[in-house]
Image (tube, rainbow, N blue to C red; front, side, top):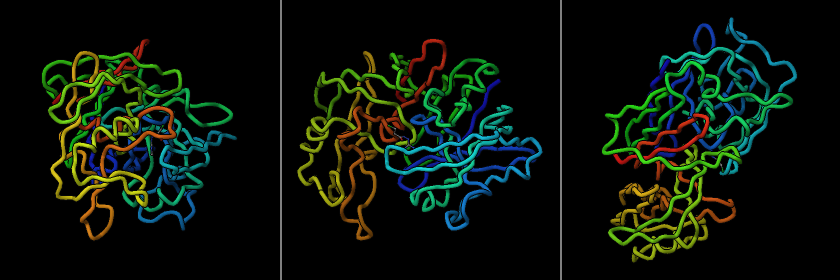
Amino acid sequence: ATGSVVATPAQYDAEYLSPVSIGTPAQTLMLDFDTGSSDLWVFSSETPKSSVQGQTVYNPSKSSTAKKLSGATWKISYGDGSSSSGSVYTDKVTIGGLSVSNVAVESAQKVSREFTAEADLDGLLGLAFSSINTVQPTQQKTFFDMAKPSLDSAVFTADLKYGKAGKYNFGYIDDSAYNGSLTYTAVDSSNGWWMFTSPGYAVGSGTLDSTSITGIADTGTTLLLVPSSVVTTYYKQIRNARYDSSQAGYVFPCSTSLPSFTYAVGNSQIVIPGKYINFAPVDSAGSSCFGGIQSDEGIGFSIFGDVALKAAFVVFDGSQSPRLGFASK
Ligand SMILES: O=C(CCCl)NNC1=[NH+]CCN1
């Protein structure tokens, strides 16, 4: 089996949303596919009304295939400080024509204000390793792990794009979606993430600096978060860039022409065009813009978020020895 689903960017490419059908008859919600976490959770009929501001909710009592997972609970917090928690059902989940039965669908009984404020986001679908799923007392498998036995190939791919719709594919690699060849690199999944080491980086047309960057491939994080030494080197190339402590990050005039940022993957390189590194205006005046490359200070590793991933075609190979493949496009 295979599946293919569109990934539509929210404003400023802050996140990408994909339609997911849950239950019988189908209830279709827009979920943020997140390779940085491993819970599939949704706004639901159990979410306090005051916390629901425009989202579509899943109602298990209206699904003939829903079953309460008795006694199971979940609670998650994300790198950006957002969080949610609740109860658990199992139900049929269909993504881009790929149907999987008895998937753990985590029903939100609490969501933090960041999620309430995101009217277009109805939940998250975790695509990291099942070892960090938060359901207790019985940890649950991700959609990908549940689908794997049925998939033609134990892979999914992320083809996110700048300011337009991309795709997630399951079970196959669309070789027409990228240029040249895929370069595969080793994954350390011991902490539950798709963690890899980039052997170097470059700013603009500069030479490759062999400072390695170890981080996670994370579709659920918007920006590229790297060591402060790398951040400093990048913004040093921009005369009017400065660290704005009120924004807790580097900003620059929105009219600035930005240098590209290149990250190495094995012996190949992915070039992030400068325009991808202008994330968004910091205020309604719109004169100062927040950089798409910021510090990973305090996290413990770097995060190759959407700013980095949308410059590539990325293969998440979930075979016995997981690995990541990158290609330019
Ligand atoms: O939480 C993280 C970072 C893990 Cl180190 N990524 N996933 C995500 N989902 C919503 C915000 N961020």
